[in-house]
Length: 171
Image 1 (tube, rainbow, N blue to C red):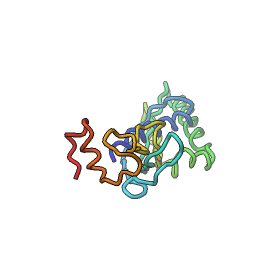
Image 2 (image 1 turned 120 degrees about the horizontal axis):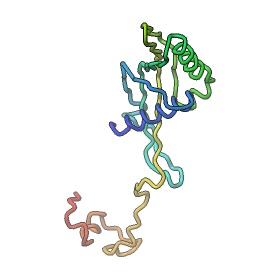
Image 3 (image 1 turned 180 degrees about the horizontal axis):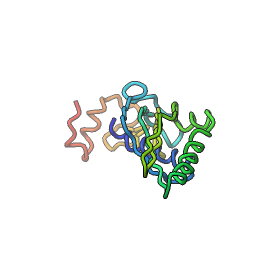
Image 4 (image 1 turned 180 degrees about the vertical axis):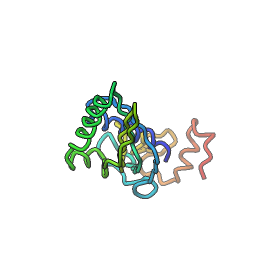
């Protein structure tokens, strides 16, 4: 389900920004997606106003934070702040945000740059949106072709009598 990838990446970015206290440049490398559940399907929400499918997607990736600074000391201070912000989160907070793994996987240091690398496993669960336009019930007794609640004809026969359904090809 390609529709989950963008919301997942937006949620991941939002969680990282929350942990880091604002937008911080980062890049995802070695990205692998895996559906959660049966083909992304986890179940059906029956919550009032939010009825519909619950879907999930897992992301395994390497996240790289390029650290800026005028000199090596400034870059080290900024790198320490990122490490502290991410590694200082308690396990319950990380799990609640969808992070199942967030571990440092090395630093790349050159004369004028520093990159922090983390390996992460992140799970995204998408619940139905408020009023997501899913038809929950269809009262056929109010349809113009219906003969009332005791009408036992097949649905296709009732729909065939409605003027706006003449182009539907219902078996």
